[in-house]
Every structure is written in structure tokens, then in C-alpha cells.
Length: 608
Image (cartoon, rainbow, N blue to C red; front, side, top):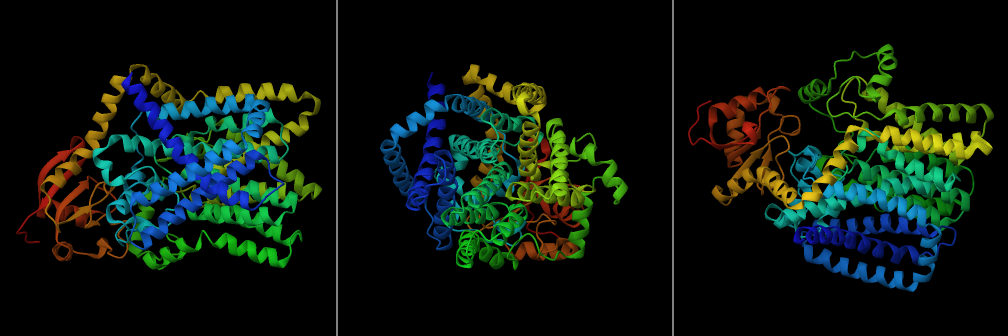
């Protein structure tokens, strides 16, 4: 019983954090006195605005080098009080709305439970989280500031969503408090849940029926690339905020309300700071909105400034850390690193138009296997076809409006991404937003064509989505949920899995002396206290280990006072120099993860 109460409290405490964020966002949204948005749209805008403001707050505390969890905790209290005040004041309206929409709310609650319970019952953390998404926020909690280290991948730029993990608790205790990992995973799951909500919001604004909009939301279960749900990876959330940004642009175009334009700009700006590729799907709709003459030049200028407000701090930080305003883009890689990235990302396909056409379906459906890729699912593939037919109709009839511009913009990004990636590391998790929007527009177009046969269409789509949802990822989630029936054994297994990951770092902390630096490589940054240096040759761009001899590496390690290595075994991508140094100049202290991860000590005397 105690274990069930613990799980319930973890879920509730994470939701309280989310509601605190909503409270802060709602405080400012309500000040705008927007009249032409639904309660649900105001709620969604409050979530994203609140997240952006929390992110701002943490960012500036970190740049001032005074970050402490206490400061975030105080803001959480204020936000939750504001939320309760707004909720109590509008309880009657909210109650009536919930009664009218009880089927929709019950449907989403079921989906929420499905993802929440499957998240809390497993201990999976994405490898990128250990290198980036969770590693950087953890380092901020340890040091009290944003960490600048030019050996790290992307140097910690554009982590405006990731730093929200610092709102969950004091991450300095993360190594010794497994419950914090669970809470962060649940927060990530809650944030990811904004994807089906965003799909529903955009669907309703496109005047799709309520049932069809729900189907579009549930169709995410057919997309294989959502399999990282709750694994502390921001691809699903970035898709949610990208879709919501498009929805707010659509609302601004329909209502011609300048306040909604400013709101859309602010949320879009933060969406880009979360994931730079969101800019690609947002630029064309904004240009169209500015050009059609709905808003004066003054409002357009204010809109642009409002959009830059949440983005500019991260651009300046990226420039300070990497020399590029939009790092990791526009960074000139040394030829050796550029070459080995190409080798690493190669998928065995030759470059050429014939290859791109012939392998379109195999790549998207993952029948041609590419490391890290997932199938987009049959339903998404069919949605791409229907969306293309819709665009052809729009072009033929010249029916250009914001509805069609959004789809055209997303389709352009989809094909740009495919052309750029078909012959290297194609990862479908980067196109979750386009796939979701294709689903929305495909259902919208089919509903228009169905006419009086809408109910038959809904039944057919419901059956098809249900069939396509029976995939291995959802089967795994159901299996994870089943583990809760034996909660004691589940908790023991989770603790064992976490301990196996944390053990090398606890061992290192026990023997490491103050000032001794550590060398790390692939997915090994989380829980390594500074000073440390990433000796992954693909990541350490300025260091360029490919040009360094073993003698140069030895000299660098002595200069940086590196005494320990915590290294994963990597035998490809031209790592010979650093691997040879490790073999010659380090002693094995202890192997972990069945010998795949080794803790090593640098020899006092090594002649290389």
C-alpha cells in the first residue's frame, strides 16, 4: 500500500508543478483580456507562456550565477496560489464546460493515464538525456550557473525546455534520490501529453468535428517515433509547441486580434528556442500573416520584437559559447570531424534521386533499418498521401488561405528533411510535428469529402487507428503498466536498474580528490562533477582529437589535471588516437555494464 501511495504522490506532485507553471502563465495571459479564444485555448496558451517564463527565470538566475532550487520553489508556490485563485473564481464556468465536454475529458484522461502509468513503471532514460537533456540541468544545479565547456556537444545551447527539469526538485540530490528521476520522467511525460492536446486544439480551429479531432489526437499512438515518451527527451514536446504555435497563428489570422498575434509570436519564439527546426514550419505562416494586410506595420513590428524576446537570450548565449547565434548550425567543422560525422551517419544508401524515390517508403516505414529510426506507421504514411492530394487541390483551385499555408509550410519542411537525411541518419522523431499535422489535415479533408457519410468515416478511421495502434511500442507500455500490479517487485527492479547506472559515479566520487578532472565520452556526462572534459572526438570540435598525436593528448591531459576516465567502449569513427592512449596510459579500476563502461585511472608515468 505504501508503494502505491508513493507513486500517487509522485504523480500529484509533478502535476502540481505543472499547475504552478499554468498559474504563472495565466496571470499574464489574463492581463491581455483576450476575448476571441476558447477556455481550452487560453489554458493551453497559459501552459506554454508559463513554461517560457519559468525558463526565463531559471536562465537569468543561472547567468547571474546565483541559481538555487529554493528560488524556483518560491515561484512554484506563487504560481500554484495564482492557479487556485483563478480556478476557484471561475469554478462555475469550468464545471459547466467540463460537463459539456465530459466525453472529450474522459477520453484524454484515459490517454493520460496510459502514458503516465507506463512512464512511472519503467526506468528508461534516453542516452541523449545522459549526455545533454538532463545532464546540463543537473550540472546547473551543481554549479549554480549555465555550464560552458567547449568539449561538450552543442556546448549546452538551446536547452530552454530542458532547464525546466530544475523546477521538479533540487537536482544536486539526483544521484542519491531515485524518486527525483521518476518525477523528472513524469514531468517529461506531462509535457509530452501536450502533443495530443495541441493536435486537438488545431483540429478544432480547422473546424474538424469533435469526434474526428479526438481521433486525430489518438492517432499519435500509431507513430513509432513517440516511443521515447517519458524518457527525458524533448522531441515530443517540441512538436507540441510547434503545432500549438501554428494554431495560435491561425487564430490570429481568423480573429484579426493583435493581442493574439503578439501571443502567437511570443510562444513561437520560445518554440524555436526549444528546437531550432520549429522555425522552418513557422516562417511561412508568419510571412503570409504579415503580408495579407490584417495588421498594421506597427503591430507587425511589435510582433517581431515579441517573438525575439524569448529567443534572443539563447541566441546570445549560443554565440558566447560557440560563435554561432544558432548553434549547432552555421558552425564550420574541421574536415576530419566533418568526415567522421559523415561516416557515423552513413546508412549504406548511395546519394541520388533514384535512391531517394525508391527508398521513400522503406525509410519511412523503417523496413530499411537505420540506427535510431522508427517507423512512422501506416496511418501517417496514408496521411501524407491524402495531404499531398489536398495541397494539389488547393494549388489547382488557388484556394490559398492560412489553413492551406500551414500545411504547405509543413510539407516543405518534411521533404527538405527527407532529402537532407535519406542517405544518412534519418530519424523520424524529428518529424513528429509534420506527421501529426498530416494526420489532422488528412482527417479534415476526408471529413469534407464524406459529407452525410461522416459517421461511417469516423467508424472506419477509428477502426484503422485502433488496428495501427497495436504495435510493439504500445505493447511494451501495456506490459509496463501491468508491472504496477506487483508494485513491490517493480520498485525493486527500478532501483536495481538505476543503481547499475549510478554505481560507477558513486564509486568515482568515493575515490576522487578535489580538483581532479575526469575525461568522459559517449553518454557518460550525467553525474560527473566538474571539472571534466569530453574526449569524444566527434563532440570536442575545438580540441580536434583527430589531429592530435598520443603525445599531444598526454600533454593536454596533464595540463587539465585529468586523473580519471569514465569511458564507453567505442571502436569506430576514427577514435584510434584516444583509444590507443587509454590502452597505454590508464589502468582499469573497475568495469561496469558488463564491461561496456570502464572506470580508469591515468598512470603516473606513461611514455607515448
